Image 1 (cartoon, protein in one colour):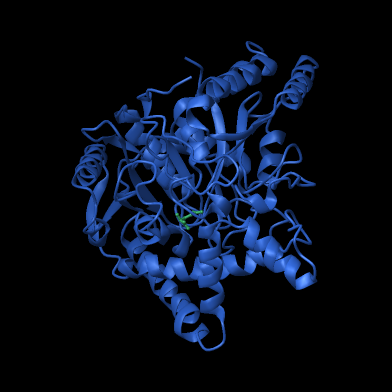
Image 2 (cartoon, rainbow, N blue to C red; image 1 turned 180 degrees about the vertical axis):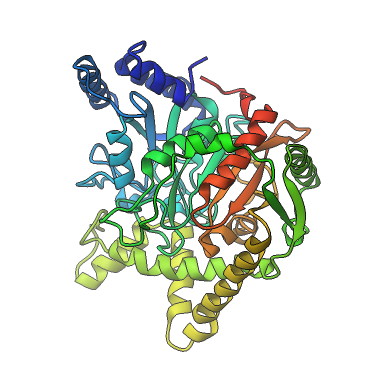
Length: 486
Ligand code: GLN
């Protein structure tokens, strides 16, 4: 079995393994599983080898290659890389080549990691199943290839489960890192809003979007976050808050931390097997010395409609730039400039993206702005206050990540409301700007992974990683390998 992220970096730094070998091994793993999974949109062969050779030469000269030396990483296809295309899973950006690397890509590279692939996603991040990809088509779940991997970072989640020793960048606007992590039995963190620069992330909903990672365990998440986090002059929403060593912080353990179980977070519609596994997971934390108590987040039931309105409003504005002139696809049928806009967008956006643009434009329009968008912003404030109150009593709150496990491909795609419903427990983190981590806490009788989620105070990403790490030291759900495994 291939080594994990920290072991790979240690071996390359210690000159036991060459970066070139590590990168070849990572690309080999991807090539072995991808025919069954359809998780990647592009693999970077020659350039990645060249970057690895460069790093090996630097190591040979005695330079410090960085804490993640020789570790391969993948970028979700909405994260700009100078190599290859950055499509956001959309026909409108099918051949778009970014002129620059996203800050996260640059920071991982500076830490010695090497980008080897771009991963599949729902178009512009809109979806929970990775069935809305116009470029690659649906990605499959390595635990059962007839099922979805979750979404929208489904390619990253499927690869994180089916391979070892890589960092997988994802983005999360309403659950797109955590829900696929849950569906694929891996660990995924959506950091606090402002913790990680979004420079070079194709925007979906700017007040909610955050970049994070999907990994084998909390320790790997901590290592990646330490390299990525921190103020970036290119993203004014990135916060100037010191970045701790998240890996070292894990050693503080979980004993004495206070964990809230929100009574609203096991709503009707949560699969009984999911609820059972998460409650068992809470018992594990209790046995580790965590002080578990009930809390209340009374506005929870409004979170999903609030998210739907705010994310659609922001998307309609962010996606206005794809007009057939500035970027990407242009209709060949168009005559006038208005026709260029209208036809390019009509031909190149998928149905879910169009639906969101229409909803968003509607709720922002004169006469409806106050009734919908403005009201949603007020409710968002109430949701945020719920968290502020809860975090005066506890250090973290816990819930299922998703009410359901991975579902069959095609099961929900024709009914948007059914698909939106799986986001109920993940959207509150983005609305409240708090960090959230999902990690496996067991399996259903049918053998599908169940994810458990922890929320923490803004910029206390380290606390939820600590809890997840303590849990993983006491359990082995995160070590189980799916049937599709490199
Ligand atoms: N599933 C949610 C949506 O469809 C969240 C997506 C995301 O986080 N990008 O909007």
